[in-house]
Length: 316
Image 1 (tube, rainbow, N blue to C red):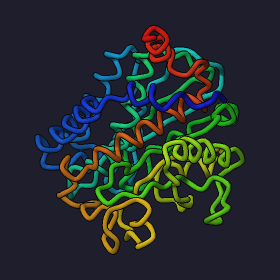
Image 2: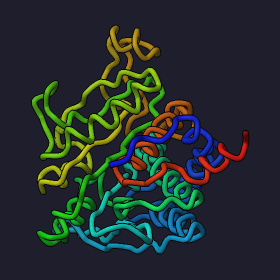
Image 3: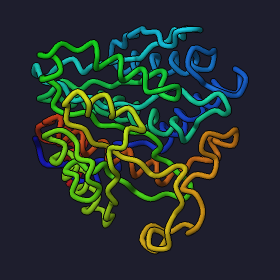
Image 4: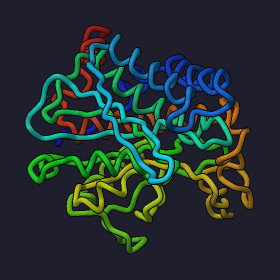
């Protein structure tokens, strides 16, 4: 594990324009395909094609991991996986579900997470970052129907492959309009829903990065509601970021994070109004920067962001 990079370097690396571009592409995919990006639809395929195109342009070799679910009317869909070209036998996975519900385009749930993971992948490639651990970027299918994509991924791992996973970082709903910053409670000290051994260290990394920015994140338990669940059940350390969906913001949370008490974190959760206009871009940028910093630390990227550091050194 390396120290997190200088926040100013991360801020320079993460691009507002790129995050906006990713969301616009996902919105366009939904608009051209009946208003959603649900698994096994044209909207999902268009979303996948965009993600793959971006990854290939950055030098990755994305691959589709196909699977099916459902007995009466099987759904055939796929995950997208892409790895850094270097690293040890150990793997750090960053994951976000790519599908939406059928009732809307799903730009916060989970276009925001897709944009964050994709942006980290693109910026690390641009920086020429060399991680000690192999970093795998995963875009899950079938999440909204039952977490099927991530479940399939973990089931396909051999015992040795599972043991090689140093951690899974989940990014699901990270641009909520009435946001609270949650970090998954790896040690179970606040929610009694601890993750596997190693999850406490992941939680601390996220907490420390956010504290350095003056943000005191709140703990959120591993309650089986997102793609971390298969990893937790498989004994793989897990953690991640979340900014709230159907829950209601409390007075205390409003004092800490701003926004409006008594309203949902995202009143468009699972609805047609979860469009690009529903995404809080300032929150999404902050969460993407946090994910970038955690990836540098947990992925063992020696020297942090080399290109940014070189720019800093040469600027004197």
